[in-house]
Image (tube, rainbow, N blue to C red; front, top):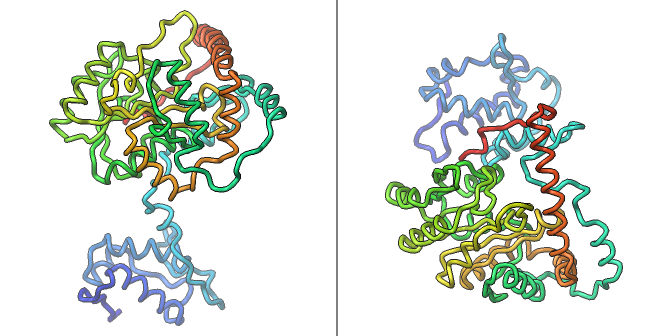
Amino acid sequence: MDWKPDPNKAEPIFRQIVHYFEEEILKGELAPGSPLPAERQMAVNLGVHRSTVTLAYDELKATGLIQSRQGSGTRVSEHLWGIDPKRVPNWKSYTTNGAFQPSLPIIRKIRDASQIPGIINLARGELAPDLLPYQSLNRLLQQASLSIPLGYPDPKGDLTLRSTLADLLAVEHSSRVSPEQIIITAGAQQALHLIAICLLQPGDAVGLEEPSYLYSLPLCSSAGLRLFRIPMDEDGLLPEAVASLQRKHRIKMIFVNPTYQNSATTTLDLDRRQKLLDICTRLRIPIVEDAAYADLNLQGTALPPLPLFVMDNGNQTVMYVGSLSKSVAPGLRIGWIVGPEQVIGRLADAKQQIDLGTSAVNQHITHIYLTAGEWKENVEKLRRKLTIRRDRGGDSAAAGCIKIVRSVSYRT
């Protein structure tokens, strides 16, 4: 082969190799089944690095022009006899190289295993179907009328729902929050995603508890963030470690789950919460407080301390992420962020670009549910039933009746 790639061209070397072999195959110069040199030999022939040839071969395989079989090497695809092969995009390259990274292998395995009859997926912390409030929601929907605008909603969220949430937070946590400090999201996962892509830049360092919620790790990685572990003990995260991470890695933000931490189940006591707030306020490190499970304190346990965002007392260090996925139903896809008004405005701008706002119908249903007083009653019911299930599950595990599979992949 006399041809060699031209290093002076703007086109990358591996693409020149791809185009050369495409033309040779399509013109019939290389017949179906014709052998191609091994990657190492091809690299020597062309005077390029082996990795360059690997990239070129991978793209040619993805388009179906060549194929590799163990024991027979790489050849022009044999099914090309008498046909003009289509020059299709290299979808393998697209699906593996996008900005949003594929799920972790453990997540895909959990998803597949969840389809097997008899398997209970504990990874998502999802309520059992019989704990979801079907009856109360059906009753309220039959009584309500859909008298709401069905155009594109306010990207911040419906004002009536935001006002209702502000009132709920005031009753439950003695907070003083304006509706303008709240944005409605499609669940807590979207809330975390908005924060990661709007307030941080690729390459920024952030701190996450060790271990952390399985599904939040690829989300942060897809945003190009560098993840660093905040160590924990049996009582939760160690506040002093945040200052150490700041000195070593210049972390820009921390994501914490201080109440019923997922997956260690710890709850930070008041002293550690105050230390964490003091350190982050002094170092000007924003805190993202994930409170997905904060309302589900089980019977016989002490009430958790005040949320960090309430203890912050207007200093605007904390962004609070709430959700109805654990206290009502994940299918509602309703979450929210409480934060400084300028931050909420920035997130609303991004949300408008992403999905033009959370479903107006879902927001309306949520508003009806909350204002009817159903939420408080449902949470009390969940506390009773989940306490019973926790006790039975613990007894069954101790007796060897069930097997709980743990995974180190929960860690950052």
